[in-house]
Image (cartoon, rainbow, N blue to C red; front, side, top):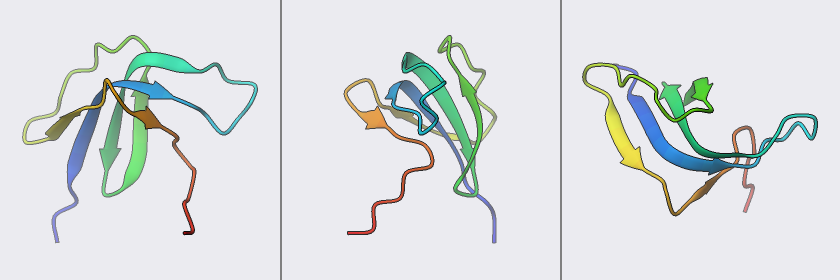
Length: 68
């Protein structure tokens, strides 16, 4: 099975670690459902074949699991 590569563009993030700042306009790279990289500048190069999702109107919380 091929692990899907997804880039979330222009995200607003709330990070689980309170010592890390909230980011706005950042890009996030995920491979196989795992966060690989967060680019706080929002200028990440998109890997070939990656699915790109514009998340400008969404909040992303890496590491948060919704159990509902």
